[in-house]
Image (cartoon, rainbow, N blue to C red; front, side, top):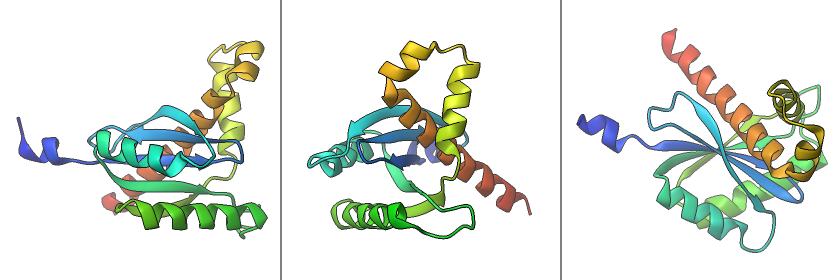
Length: 150
């Protein structure tokens, strides 16, 4: 097997929420983002993220930054900045932020178009969070492809 393929690290996407954090992962070639899981936003969250980073061979973490319609940071963005600081202090992997405007709305619409029933969307809220993380990560991956082709 090609050595570069074996050594390629995944990219993790995080959708920070007050209750839960949606997590997505890229494939080893960093082309496709897929929903991975959700974790509770609480005391053990950084440890859980650290385990996933180690177990899934993650080399970069992309955290969704909730910007307003003008592209500016608001109150929620300050919470995300603090969250990013905690990750950087505890996990020795590069962490960047990425505009996450509309990802949760798109995630809801995607689940709806997939035929997910209303009851399932309401009771399995983590699905929306991990889907939103995948959407923001896919946006990041796609932007890198465009910049590499220039």
